[in-house]
Every structure is written in C-alpha cells, then in structure tokens.
Amino acid sequence: MQIANTVILDDRRAERRGLLTSAHANDTGLDTPLEPGTRLDRYLILSQLGGVGMVLVYRAQDTELDREVALKVLAKPYCQQSEALNRFRNEAQAQARLRSPHVITLYSLLETPNAAVLVLEYSQGETLEQRLKSRGVLPADQAIGIFDQALRGLAHLHEMGVVHRDLKPSNLFITTGGQVKIMDFSVAKLPDHDVYPLGTMVGTLLYISPEQVRGQPVDARSDIYTLGVSLYEAVTGRLPFERHTDYALMHAHVQELPPRPSKLEPSLPPALERVILKAIEKEPERRYRSAAEFRLALAKLGLTHDRLIDTVLPANAYGPVPVLSKSHDSGRRVLAGFAVDLLLVAAACALLYLLGLYPGRSSPSPQTATAELAPANTPVTPQPARARSRLVAAVAPKPTPIRAERKATSSAHAATEQRIQRDENLRGK
Image (cartoon, rainbow, N blue to C red; front, side):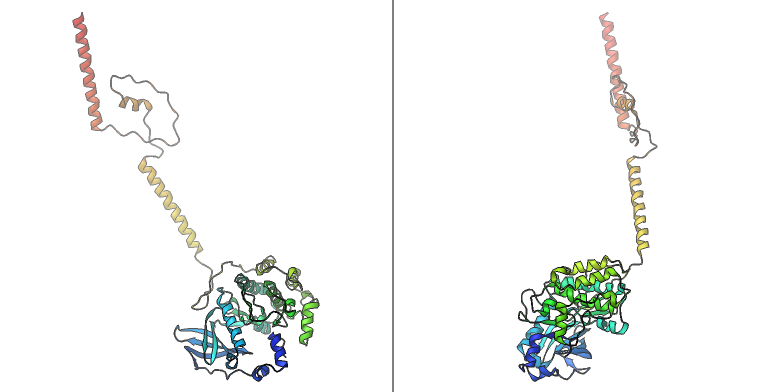
C-alpha cells in the first residue's frame, strides 16, 4: 500500500471486499503504453511523461495547430466504468473553469470509443517533489517564492469555487522559467456538486487535512492545510507526520501535534515557523482563512528579494504564458518625457509672443487711448496713473489710414463751426 499516492477510501474498501474488477484491484489495468509515432485522433505521440493508477500522460504534437501538448489518457478498462468516467469528466469541468498563469491550462476533453483524453498545456520543467529529491531542503527565500506563486493560483481556484483537495509537491509544477503551476484536478470539488459521496475520504494520506480524514465537508481551508504541509516539507526535508500504516497516519493528522520545524531545521526563521504551524492547525477556524491571507503572511516575512508582481495574466489558450521580462529602456523613456516637456514650454512661449503677452513692450497710457477715441473738441479728463501690472498689456496698434482720415475730417468740421460762430458774433455787434 503506497500512502504517498492519492487515495479514495471507498475504493480501498471495495478493493478489499472484491467489489471492483480484478484490473482495478491489482492496479494493472492500464493498456500497453502508446509508442512514439502513434496517432491518437489529431495528436501524434512523442513520448511518455509519466502515469500512475488510472491514467498515463504523454507529450504529443497537435498536428492541426502545430503545438506541443500534454495528453492525460484514462486507461481503457476504466472508460467502460461509468463512475471512473464521471470522475474524469469532473476533473475536466473543474480545470476548464480556471484561467491563471499559475494553473495548467486545459485545452479540451476528447472522448473516443477506446479512450478518454484531457488535452493540456505542455511546459518543460519539474515538479516540486522532483526538485526536493534532487536538491534537498530549499532555502527559506526560494521556498517562499515558490509558494507565493502557488498561493496565487490557489486563490484563483477558490475564487472560482474549486477546492483542489490534493495539493502535494508532486502536483506543483515548476517550469524552466521558474513559474509555478498547479496541476492534477482528479479529486477536485466543484461548487455545485461533488462526484464523491459525503463521508468519502479523498486525498493523499501524507498531506491530507483532518476534516478530509473524518470525511467532513471541505472548503478552501483544507487546501491551506495541505499546502502548509508541503511548505513544511520543503523547508525541513521532512513531513510533519510519517507513519507506516494508513491508520497511524490518519490518527496523527487528527490527534497529534507536529514537531516544530525548527527542530528539524535549526536555521529556519522563527517567523516562518509560526506561519507554517498556523497553516496546519487541526481546526480549520485557526488556520488562515484564505490563500490571500496565507500569502500575505509569507510576504510580511521579508525573506525574499524577488519583486512580487500582483498582475494576473490570463492563461494562453494557444501555448504557454509568456514570462514577463524587465524593461531596459527606462532611461530612454525619461529622456523622451523631458523632450516633450521642452516642446510644450517652447510652444507656450511662441503663443505668448504671437499674442504680444511678453515683458518688454510698453502699453499705451490711459490718456493716449482716451484722446485717440474722443472727438478733437472734447476736453480730455486726466486719469490717475495706474501701477504697471506684471504682464504688460499689448501695445495699441498704430493708427490706420482710415482712422487718421476720420481724425482730419473731425478737425475740419470743428474749424468750420468756429468760423460760423465768429461770424454770428460780428453780426450781433
């Protein structure tokens, strides 16, 4: 009995009672693996990536869209079992809801007379389980960077109403570019229904939450527990509970306190230890309430030097999500902005010059303006001098010929009236 694999307790009981097919009981019901070059519908098999239990996973070429994909193929004997096929469809429905760069993208579900296939995004890299086996314990900053991304993906799952129920290291994929993606939704719970009856224990015993052991309803906090156990393992190299039997392991998750991580890894920061222990509390009410709260607790530790970007990119349905790269032309953008500012200032100065609103030009006095507009025989009343304003008003334009002609005509009329008045005075005498 392999306690590191995902288990469904009802199936274990059925196996012991001989209620399932011999193929299922012996776990040898898989078809002969597909050889490279085999064609499955429009997909050309390139190599086998892995497989456990009911499924095999292949790397394949989509001959119509010319891209590499991963094919998760349900073994032929299980395609004839309605319960197994419904679970496979449930996995597809759960994954189809999700669009996040931190979740493996599902392209389509393909059902043929001989197989049921999930067509998935293909990425190069390794699982967290493989990394821990090859490199050993992760430094605190590296572990936080990995789990920060995992928690981003988990927050999206919970936002869409999906509970994963099996967030062990083998289900956290790290691409060659360092991006973390959640995968394998084979036991995921949807918000509107659950293909597993209430009371069924679903999950991996080494990472399973106490409420999953009890067969109680689960929510987002169950995933918090499982991911907390995975983080415990990543920074200490050990699991909080390691037992030789299923019963002893289930009992430990429900009743026993885990060893403090610092006892297994003395260099572990105390603040990180507190975060881990809170995540794996026995009672869901004492854990972090959400993936976002768990992620915030890790960010507050300040143990990573990487800049955590909050932008969530949609999953690319036609290939891997592009990795964000840092821009190297920030200096050019600053210079371009400075040049635009200079152009604006120059344009403003030109506009002031055209309007005559610039220092250095004298403005006409009030007396001059009044005398120019008043008739020649009208006395001009002196006006009090006014203080010069900061912006000198535009100089009055020079008299035009028409205005000079009007002025001469007014003077002639005035002279004529004076002569008439003088003649009348002489006649009177």
